[in-house]
View 1 (tube, rainbow, N blue to C red):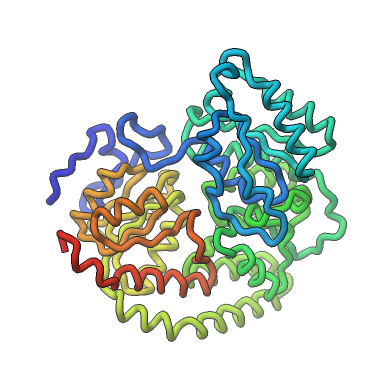
View 2 (cartoon, helix red, strand yellow):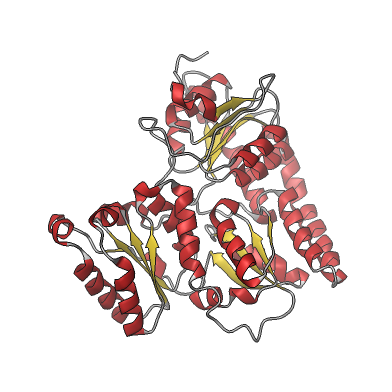
Length: 447
């Protein structure tokens, strides 16, 4: 056993499945001193809104906030790439003393004149919340002058957790929803929500729906367009993939426009197939949609199964640790790893709720460690204790894996390879196999 300690105040956010009754605290602010893997409220809002490709994204605050989140999603666009530019008002000491409203107004007017965006998002960072700039009034003024939506995003980092940033982003998007024309939309139409097109997944998933006869009105926000978001209230169903980031907006649209929503996942064979079946089932008055979905799933599984079978023979029995942003992704990863014959020994998330962790408990084997809002020492401790062969996480977890001398798979928003859909499952399996079977691990000290 390792001697790495656990902070006393963190014990109720860690659970090891076994004989002890399930009790897990979550959805609370990170413990001071625990060096949480979470990001701040501003970062949470930025990762949701950033992929809207034809909007201007202006960060009102010090330059470091813009540098920290530049290209944070890596979201691909099929057209405009204004989102790939990072703009900041670059607040200095004198701005903190005298206020940054004039600087914000000047930056907005200059950028809108130069780039002619469809809309602008203005992100308030910590210092703006402290000095009290009236960002809303500046946005209203500039929006009226230029005739485009200029939307304040109240994302001061100290206001809560990354999950609060998701809610703030949804509030901003909600100001666009319902302002566009919907007369040309058909009766079998959906919005894809919580898909960010990191490696081109949105295009693959949109094509799946097209093949089964379902129109996609908007994708929020991968390869997103302001005009599509404006008319998204004309869709008949919202399909929410990243539930932590987009459920708030889906609930708002259900209340205001009567649009129901379902939760799905596009990771792994089982969940990708189920996502298609669930949408087809909603439009059950057109039974041909379900028939097409079944044909599509059968064809795709038959195509990738032979290669997956070869990979399974190489990774079967290996042990994996999972730490991701949202718990819903962890569910799919557990299923995908089991399909490959692997065992999950650690599963955690940054933003899971109590219900999410109850589902994780039921999915995991005895002895599996479940973590909420973990820190590097806790992750290191359980990787060693559980003798994991693979760590699946994001850019902040990569150094932990390599320091521990085990393989790593990036399943967060910095990657370039699509891991969703049927093709994505094959890519994921190849990546898992390549990193686990790499000969480099024979040289690590604890192997």
